[in-house]
Length: 225
Image (cartoon, rainbow, N blue to C red; front, side, top):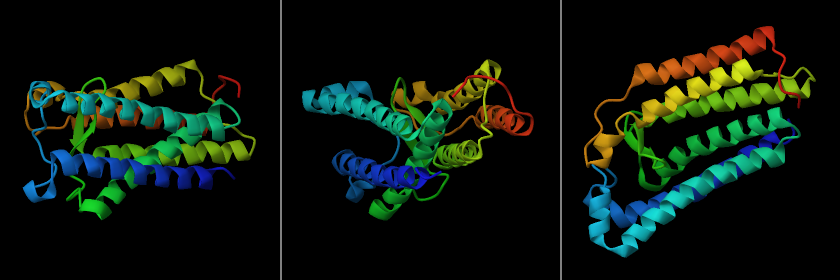
C-alpha cells in the first residue's frame, strides 16, 4: 500500500502533461474562438490535403498515444513486486490518469461541458468515441479494483486469477473496447457521433466486475506471484 500514493501523484502529474498537450493540439486545430473541439473530426483525406506537416503531426499523435500506454504499464511494473501488484498499480495509474485528464481539461479550457459530451478517446487502431462518462466509469472501476487487489496483497491473502478468470476479463474488456470503436467507420468518414452502444459497454463491464467479485468471494487458484 505504501507505493499507492506515489503512483497516484505520478498519474495526476502525467494527466496534467497529457491535458496540456491536448490543449495545444486543440489550439491549433480547434481554437476556442472558432467553437473549440467538436465533431466531425478531420478525415485522413483532409489531413493529407493539408500537407506533410499535418500528416507528420498525426503520426506523432499516434506515437504519443502508444507511448502513453507504455508509460502507464511501466509504472505498474516498477511499483509492483509481483504480477498481481503490477496489474493493480497499472489499473490505479490508468484510472487516476484518465479521470484527472478530464479534470485538468475542464480547468484549462472549460471542457467537457458535461459528462455526456462526446469525446475522441483514442486513434489506435481505429477512432474510439463515446460520451465522457463512459471512460470515467471504467476508470473508477479500475481504481477500485486496483486498490482492492493491493489491499489483499498487504494482508497476505492475494486475489489470484486463473486462466478462466483471465479469459473472462479479456472477453469483458474486448466488449467494452468494441463499444468504443462501434461507430469508427462513421467517424473516419467525417460523420458526427450520435449513438453509443451502451448495452455492449455495460455488458462487458458487468462480465468483468462479476468475475472480480466472484474472485473476492470464493477465491481462485492461478498464476503465482
